[in-house]
Image (cartoon, rainbow, N blue to C red):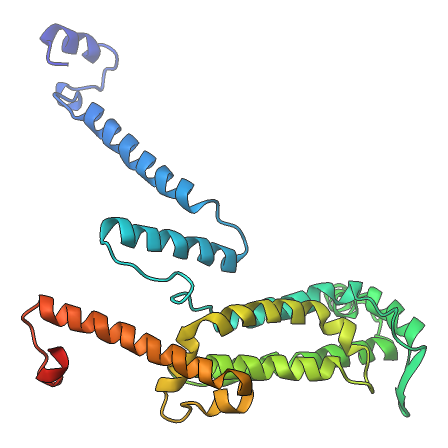
Length: 296
């Protein structure tokens, strides 16, 4: 590009081209190589993380493992990916509700009696199954979209009332957590366990046995996330640190695990206290709010 004769030839290509339009020494090659390196570094990270899916919970599990690996490799900082993974409370509630809504049409009602309930609300098994398979949610929505002068049958309304009643428990749990200006982790597990307990009680109702098949899928996923939350010590420690909760929920709901929970909290406090003492010995900084003998 610095050859004058070659630059003159380029000017003949177009009449509106000027010499100042032709670049001189450029770093095009270096920029291309830099872009190539950045793209391959990004690809390297993506290959370690894996492909993102619509299951946010699975994505978060994978991202947490990779995050721990980065901390260990680059900063020599060791954390537990399970103990530090706090699930999104509204997301879990939404997953349970979505599985209920998406699977109720395929629920197995074969174990129900021919009729159940008391007058004036007596439901017949065959008619109930037929209406459920027709999907009254979409039936009503499609009617509104097409503006067809068609009204739902009484049994459609009965099924919709059952679904509405099923959604009251997750709605109450969601409202409880979002009613706080800053939702606290200490209230997540008690609220979630209360919601699951309400669903279990409804699903085992002898007067309304249809709720068992309706709630089966939603309860299965709810139990799955409850195992993850129950195994995470962060929830228990948050409850213990909350002055209005302490061990009240554990003593009331986890009667067989009181001693193990207290032992785990004592172990967790001892571990973090040991790390704090090591940190205090390595750095000359002393916080005036912390007694000096604690740092010794």
